[in-house]
Length: 273
Image (tube, rainbow, N blue to C red; front, top):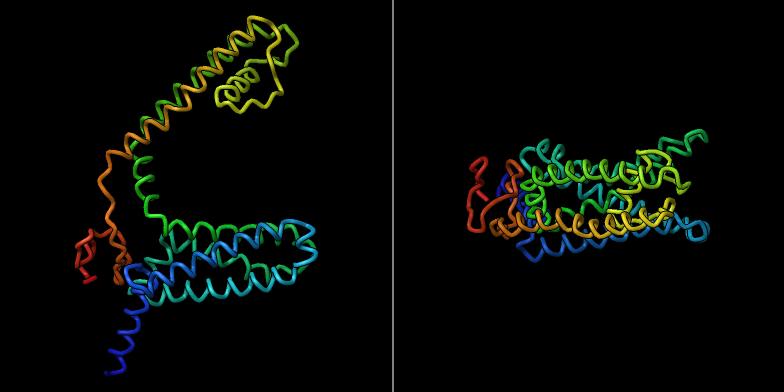
């Protein structure tokens, strides 16, 4: 086989392994990557525990560098195996992959003591490795579509709840405003209404009059119904969506991934899959 064709063959083979999950090698690659992501996030969390950092800090540092190097190799391979690297680099997944890898390297250039706080912030950015999981959750695409399709209804609903909160907050202020119970202004009363309707209930403000407590009970009951509305809207849109294709093939020319199950050519650029 001619060297050029051989190189092209290996490039296509690597693209198939890295971007697709239809082959045993592709599935193994994804499983290994998932394990590395979980280990990376676990190390970041454990590192925030002072006693563990003091005892095992060196080991955490070594593990972080090993995983960062592996993520770097993965990132470079993803760039190298597509015909249009910029499509991947500036895609959502490409930016997430870069954000998951870059902070560790940035930490090398921040050495002076005044920058220690920034260094700590950069270390926390490594938790973005968990966003790499998005590419492996097929149903997440359907959920995003359902949320996008219902955004107008949800927007109207939120606006209605905001108006309701203002009205109820004003009423609560009229009831409890002179009772020394914490309802010192309408904005503060609106805050209490929102906290109560969402069933959070911090307990920092509470009605003391009989009428105020009765009104609070009504607001609490309303809260249960209000919380269920957005879920119903999204669920309705979700059930109306067509079945998502299970094809995992990614076009090596334009990096498009949304293809039908029986597609042989990319619907965006016409390149063979």
